[in-house]
Length: 253
Image (cartoon, rainbow, N blue to C red; front, side, top):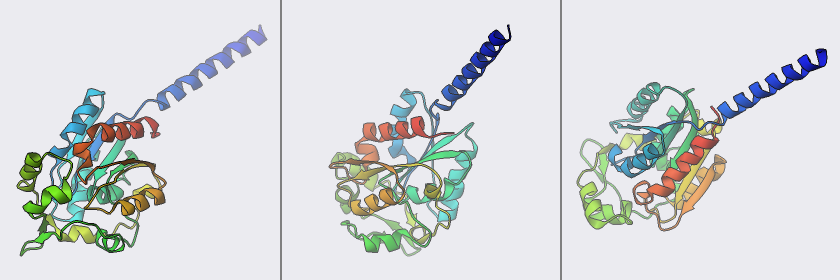
């Protein structure tokens, strides 16, 4: 009788352990998408559609692009609204934002899409000099805001998008405070949290070799997309969504 009780108890413990393991294996369902400079969140629509179709709860951040602290605050506001663990995704300058905001306890994984993953003491401006891009210089307003000259937008930012779409986006830009490109991040979240990285191999805004450096340094799970411009999140939404879902399935809450 004592042996039967012990066997039963062991079975219950194993079942409980199996249940815990199964629960831990459940993918993270909350995805927060952070856009980069010059653009708004609408460009994430193709990725949003694929993720929501697959059962994820996706929320977009609309940063004001008036300063790095303000953009981080806007992102933290959305993270706070989530009902559980979060995969935080950033494109371009959005990578700097998630590197800071990703220290939030709800964030369990970071996904960089052709994005800056800065270390303490670095800025986008400094790294851009070490790894020069191949785009035209940005236009600067009298009050210190940057945009891409519309005639350069298609070739520099969105070469693999239809010309009509790129032309519309060129005339729908969100001017970005130049100060965001000199922001310093004392405690980068990628040092303590798992990350995934997508390199856009034909990127003219961020040198692909700089993207590779970021990914290698952070020990990110890395994929490269041939022919992809800086607008890879729009031109290759299947690849982007696949990488985000991989992060959601592998990150441990």
